[in-house]
Image 1 (tube, helix red, strand yellow):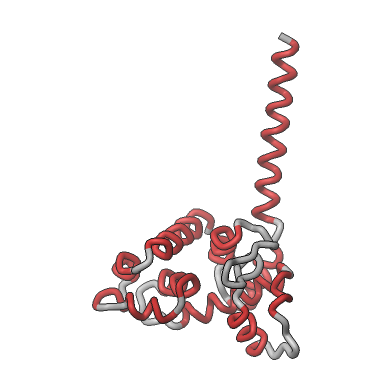
Image 2: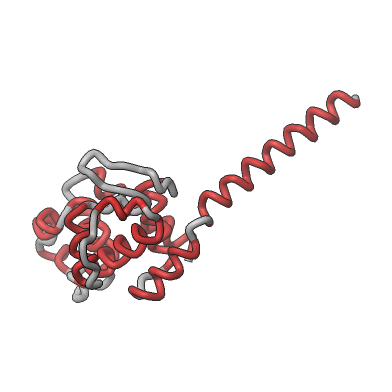
Length: 176
């Protein structure tokens, strides 16, 4: 009986340690997220949902196309952000820093969503552009899909991008 109790205590301790680690992993960048949210007026829940999908909160994540960090920032987006912020001699490698990454990614996310301000909900359009590029989004905006976000999501031509948009929106709605 004592052995069973010790095993249960050990299992519970391991479970609680794991839950603590999961919590820490998902919240350790909350300060950077809050700073970017305030600066660029993007919901912290949306920023966090993008980070979750892009890197699963891994600041060392690297993409196949050269994307860096938490929000998987491409060099062109990083340079556009640096230019808009008047940061001289900016190097894409600086996006390995979590705060820089979240600031650049949040700025870019705000920028791409602004392209679709005439839609009933710019979020799916902006997320699709963040993932698949503006050219693809423009191809998927036919008829109703030009301003109706639900119709647009159905018209997304890449199943991976459609799933990306749906999962981020689900996570965003669960956490706001």
